[in-house]
Image 1 (tube, rainbow, N blue to C red):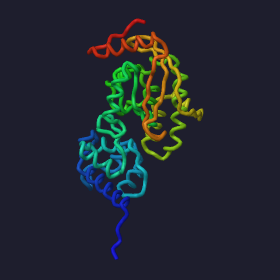
Image 2: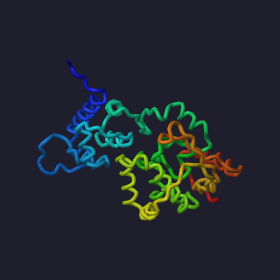
Image 3: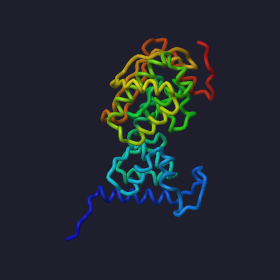
Image 4: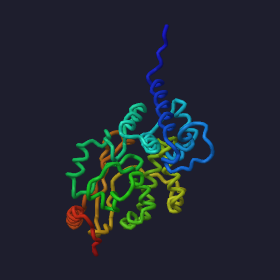
Length: 290
């Protein structure tokens, strides 16, 4: 009698072999690491891939050993970047892991062409698609210039929590930055309860704690706040003060992506958003004195 391995076991072993093969083809010099002492095996070491991906060495080792562990889309994204995967290899990686690709600049089932078209048509209302970790997966023109210049940032920095505590332009746009940041940190803590073991969440938390004393102080309060809309005052560098209603529209389960809109509360804010949309079409935006 022949025993057939479950499909999940086959997938895990295929994933392990694929990761190992991609790791062994990359030289340290390709990713900016020193070659160091003589290497017994070609390519990168496991601990180097873990370092580049901001995940634990033990966890990555288990992944290459085909152990039964959960892998989030954000961790797969980090591994794809660390291993310099091309688009075909990236697609293969996510297929083996049975996961959806959340990358902002890759075809992503969470951000369909129809959703991207809807974001554009919502203008001048600022709108974006975020996941529960506050990664900004896609956005329209006015959202891209609402709090800072998102286009100028690398994709890994397009995270609302990270920007709220570390980006000077984003922080300057928040009228009550202390209160806003207290609330977003409390929302992040509530959301993280379902992702405590996921390396990508832990990596973001560690990055914030290392970079921001303000975040460390707020995080130590252990406050939690559920998701919900609220009105905000935003001081845009190009058109002045905006009074906006923040609303979430979930595109799937509460742990998945959501459409975020910033609807103007008054006519003056609407007119200023329309001006921001017009200015965005120009090659350079000049700060306005409002």
